[in-house]
Structure formats: C-alpha cells, structure tokens
Length: 87
Image 1 (spheres, one colour):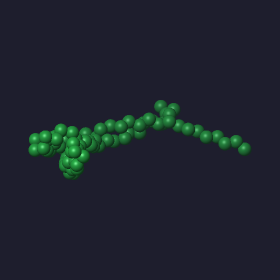
Image 2: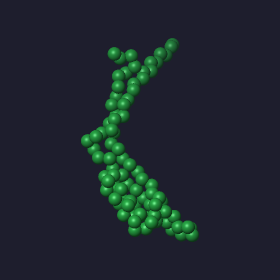
Image 3: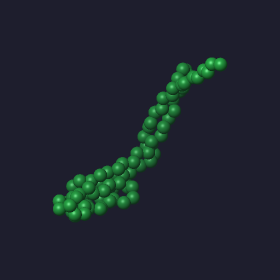
Image 4: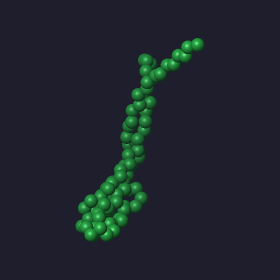
C-alpha cells in the first residue's frame, strides 16, 4: 500500500485597513535612581496617535520623565492569493 500526499502553497498579502484608525498606548519607563519605586503612569485606553503624543508631552512636562514604552495598533486585512499552480 502506498500513500500519496500533495502539498500546495498559497501566498497571502497583509494590507493596512485605512478605514480604521491607528491607535496606541504608552507607559512611563522612568525608574528611581535609589532603587525605589518607578513611575507607574500609563496613557490608559488606546487613543489616536496625536492624542497619545499630547499625553506623553504633558506627562514629560510635569515630571521630566523622558523614557516611555509605546504600543501601536494598526488594523490590517489579510488577502489570500491564488493557490500554487492556479492561473
């Protein structure tokens, strides 16, 4: 008895979804030099990037903290291509 298998390849394209806004969050990475607790500031819920920039600027102006971690969310759509060998 023989077994025969066929494997096929399919390319996918990832496209930015321009109908949905790009959003982000941030948190302050400042740590106390004496080993004490660091800053626990976060921007909260995801927001538009221009609003996030303003929130970061406000926190920096109030505290002189200059290091932040930022997470940005882009909505994407995955578009399947043709199967290997299809015209």
